[in-house]
Image (cartoon, rainbow, N blue to C red):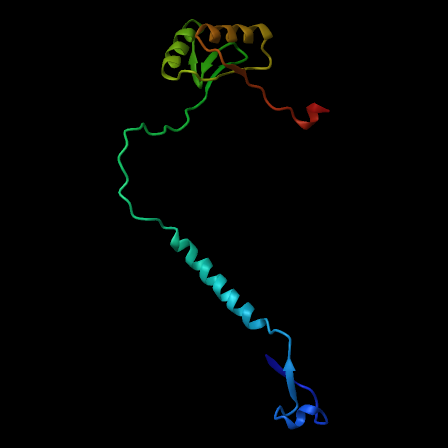
Length: 152
């Protein structure tokens, strides 16, 4: 308990040896807060050091390593009707054969078809038909996002 002054004499405590002080019933929280802040800092510094881990000898595995994602398979047709697989030009006669070769190494993949906006709809549908003949069942068309001005 803490004690506080009550003024100058004239009360019952002046002769009890308190010399003008009486017991105070309030708790002084300052030392408690100081200790808590010090403990908080100690735990903040020590916590990352405790998470290093236990030294172990891990077993060997024969599982295949995870391969990074491959570049998407994109077939494009420009305004002149020239065909491209990814960025490589390809003739229309060789397109199905080249796509089948890629399908054997990259099975069950989505193929993206890009076409110049000035092309006729039929040319892009012909390209999609060729891609389907190569054995791809998942075909997606790629379009450019609309700008705010075009949406108005």
